[in-house]
Amino acid sequence: MQKFMIMGGNRLQGTVRVNGSKNATLPIMAASLLQEGRCTIKGVPRLRDVAVMRDVLVYLGASVAWEKDVMHIDAGGVNCQEVSEELMRRMRASNLVLGSLVGRFRRAKISYPGGCQIGTRPMNLHLKGLQALGATITEKYGYITAQAEKLRGSEIYFDVPSVGATENLMMAAVMAEGTTVIRNAAKEPEIIDLQNFLNRMGAKIRGAGTDTIKITGVDSLHGAEHAVIPDRIEAGTHMVAAAITCGDVLITNVIPEHLEPVINKLREAGINVEVKDDRVRVWAGKRPLAVDIKTMPYPGFPTDMQPQFMALMTVAEGTSVITETIFENRFKHVMELRRMGADIRLEGQTAVVKGVPALSGAYVEATDLRAGAALVLAALAAENGTVLERVEHIDRGYERLENKYNALGARIIRVHK
Image (cartoon, rainbow, N blue to C red; front, side, top):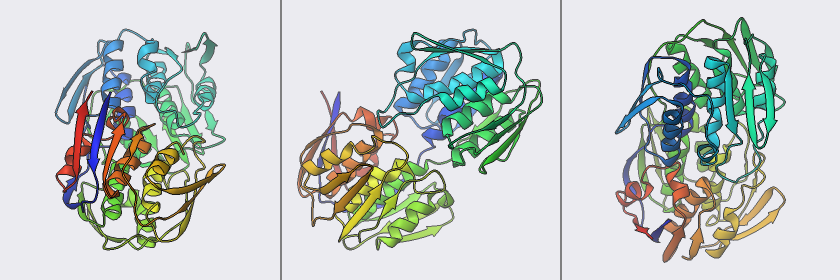
């Protein structure tokens, strides 16, 4: 267990570079299992979740070398199609090996995955899709087993868009006989990045980024080299950090098109945002204006930015209404923000936030990854010191966040207990 000691009141200024996307890296790592050669992935962030996925690949028999932000994966030695319960419970995204193992070996056995407790994320869409491809699914004693003598292309329709299910079924279908069409697919940029990686390995996929993805099965895949896209949620977090501290920050290694909902809401709140090529400058000289937020699947406002934006709205002029439509338990940060003096009222899946002139430091706890990021932002703007417990949640999605913010003028100390 580790904690942050954060002294608020400093204006963030300077330049910060965004790391590669966690949510793109994890499915790409899983997809490397589909071939017997060597894959090189560049821009890999050094995060706890990535380390867990590395451990999963090694457990299955892959050889993984990770130096700085480059990862080499040799999947030729993979000889296991079962993932231990201990590894599965360490991270939700570990379920992404289901599609790649079934795609290559026609068999996989995993336990129900763990991870952040922000709401139910059922596997039913994943399993229905695998069944449509010809797999037999057995659920027993907390484990899922999928196996098939042969996978055949199929028409798959999602009742609701699911990022994980879209990724899993893309991986399962790349070596199925015939053509697979996924309708009402998730449109996130990370889906496009996965498609690009798979196609570099020899797959035939088109349509990622739209609601219809078409996959033409191939006989085999080969190794490939790929650079992951920048992390849009990390970039958005830095943008809010600049706004909440009335700072002036240049954020580099950004794809601005991935951040349009965040950029638009910041501008609506009176924050200055300048976009140029792969850079975004954010600066503010006064309190933000209250704005309403409703999370939606991409390209709507991302649920992964809702906690950070709520932190900003706690010090805004006026009252904002924040509606969470993706995860039913994604308001756990509300109680912690209240400890810091925030005025927030919950009404089901809606939070009514009445801005206050300033927050005050307090002892708070990160309950999940993005809640932890929101509390860091709130602490940066608070009038005095904050102690933030359980920062291991933050390490799941941000590479040494305290170092980046200290370089911008913050005062954050990591304490090892």
